[in-house]
Length: 239
Figure 1 (spheres, one colour):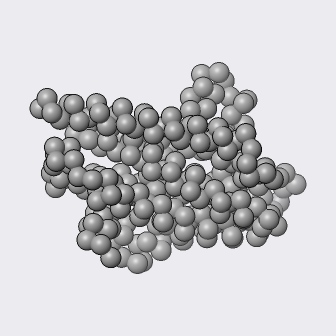
Figure 2 (tube, rainbow, N blue to C red):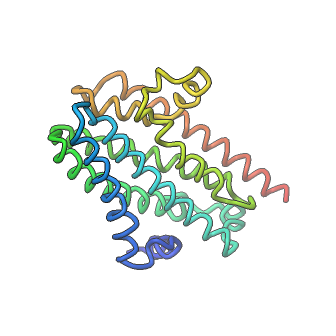
């Protein structure tokens, strides 16, 4: 394993031991999933979207947490100053964080997805769920990056990533469709691609309008991240 990946793994406290990984990223989500399934079994309502939304938002929150924890660790050891002054290559600094976060989130999605879809007899959706992994990983990478860099040198560096993670269920329209939200909340939720990812998974087609919307929103977030980076770098150069 490359030294950059080893350092990144060590920077996330939850990766300290196999037991911690097992409990935090698998056993606790599985327990929550079982509680959800117990409710679904006693209802005639179709819980497919709620199940998929719960799994995906849980995985995105996990990925954001990994990126944020690693970034805060770098701040604590004063590495962030070097990052914005020396500007190491994306491949050596940010990419390991994104890959580790993406792999962790993908494993979570696969485990929870197989259990949940099999229990609800919706296993036919597993293929689309697997195909959605790149979209989910890119989403968590962009949101994790955005929240992390805006937390640099703040009293609480987790302020934005915690807010985003706590708002994921609301932003995804898991319980109530985004279209039924109040106007101000609908506009805010529409900026995020999570609801569209759920619509895309539930649609039989692979190439459809939802996929174009997802790609467009991810490109928009990529541009937002570029501008946010420029602002942070400018502030560092002034100091």
